[in-house]
Image (cartoon, rainbow, N blue to C red; front, side, top):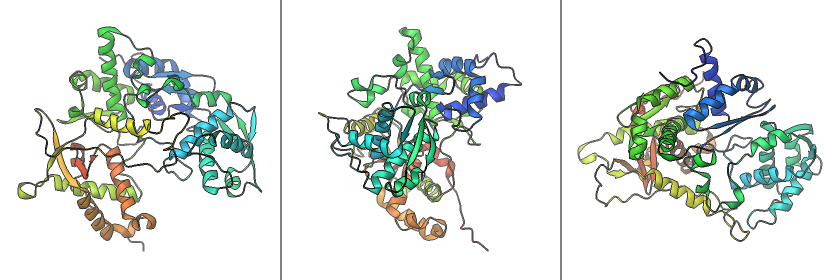
Length: 450
């Protein structure tokens, strides 16, 4: 029998699992974030949470009077959980830079700060970084700064005492905003497990087992591999066996994994020939719902059905089979992108550049290695053609700005499918991964308003 939550009575188990899902979905919980009831729920189960989250996942829960902070062990670089702007769009590099500079500037202020004064302090730091800068005379720069401030406000690190940040962003000469600073929450927001000044690569933030005090020796390594396998299932839409090394594969196949994860979260674990997935049909834990609402999600679902149908073709119309990039290759590609923006002699030349598409190379002429898994390949031109047909058939229900920009819509739809582990982006197209077959045969119709 699982030792997870062994001291929790069956009558209280559902409440405990709700607290687990809450702190996993929101690693920072404060009196007002994600809602006013969350902190009380987490604090009630704090002791049991600390024990189980460390034992099962290797995560450390740190609680104070006004915060609960989950320190995750990071096994890879995940681009699917960005900070979001006021409009719900992912932060770009400039906004992330504004966020960290704002955190630094707030450390030099007292109990309150005016938004204009804070912007001047951030601008003074930003101007010393080539390619960044913050010009409060420019509306785009003010919007980026206010997005960073709003992100902190939502979590309670800042509390609006007077005025309006939106009005200041519109006209800083005629509007102002005053904020109270919560030191405790501010400290919890930025709680790194490493001394960041000593890092020469983003990969130094990984292998967090040692940073969180995991055990050494053979038994400790086995325990850490078991934790890593559970994290892989918990933190990803699916854990594919083809992606795992031999030691991790054994842990993924172990019956105890499903038992521990199910009892911890209250969700079911599904095993298939290709891998393991934690099934969250209610959306109680998932940060991304798929299928979901909105133009991008709808286009992605329809595109997924067409890719899946193409992957099933046989004979002369069968798609080419190519190997997917390995987990190590994906990690190396992401690390190169991020490390390219690290300061070099005080310069961050790439900071002002737009994000580049993360593309993995696959050699279609290479001989297949023993045991190598290959997946159906569809080309970029085929994907563009399919999206054009989808837009022509269902575009009346799509947002006008995306309907008029098919390249952006395609890119965002493919990004969503990649985040859900349904496809892998490769040079020249995409690979259909096994989970995609779940959406084979999807149909849709445009609802007409009476």
